[in-house]
Length: 404
Image (cartoon, rainbow, N blue to C red; front, side):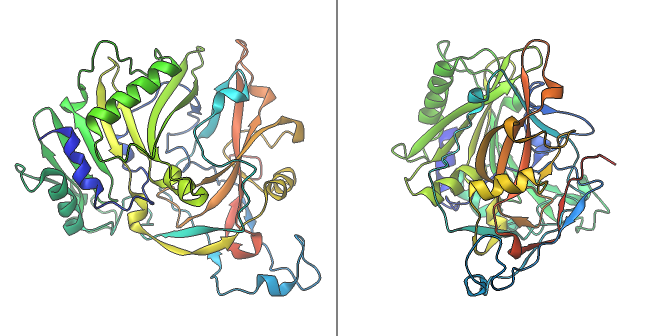
């Protein structure tokens, strides 16, 4: 079986809602934006809630509306979003090293000219205390995805069950966390959250042509796009090449090397669809240390979620006011240092496995003057402000400026 046959699996994946998971198999990046303070966790999912204060907004009264309008405009059948987070969420610092904020472009299709009245919010149906996608998409759906990839022709299936690695977690020991088939030069793995991973030669990697540079720190931007294009053409036939957008981005290591990543998503031209594709329908390409193709990860987390509704959102300026007023979530080791240090704003979705609600946030990258490096690298910490209007959220903790 060829790696290109992953295309068949994509026919059964909801193309609007795909995101990454199973950090146990995620390739490790170099020492860069993620500065490990306590323990590592997935980028958007890492938050320090210790010592937090409660975010419990009140529904505005008529003629006492902080964002304008009347009470009738807020009457809705939308349910209140009661936020929870599990102990599966780790602690860490989300910070990005760069000489200038312009170097931290990440391919997000959102820009400040876009105006949305509302955006979809999702419930994580696999929310639990251990971070395993349970009940997930189900064993039958996992087998169907595998069959779509292989055309029903494959060898013995290896089953990984919760009891093999996390007995006593509260999830049944016989629950299938993933299935895997070995095809010699690569394996195909279907995870309980719907993610499809093709791993080459046991992480030793698939040899690429000599003129293709595919590395974390030794590949230029132009060569990175050439590498993505080559891999896309030769290993990703499932993509509609007319709508495919290649993304290469990253930040610097402490030693001043630019550490790069490689991603693909479908770009339709519809603003909301493109935001969802970017957030949840991302395909990650990973090299090994020798510049070989190590894995292709086709993310599909929202296959374990359901849409709650389309919720009114605030503007970027309103979010900035909340940021300056202390209404943010962050893992930065410093309180927000002031307006002049706000370097960038973007609208993103947070979709950590340890969160029960997946909703949009404004992420502000804020320069932390205390953390500038001697080599001139600046450290930009991430500060999150909920994009959903406050009267629809309860239980969301905000950081109070300490780790304990």
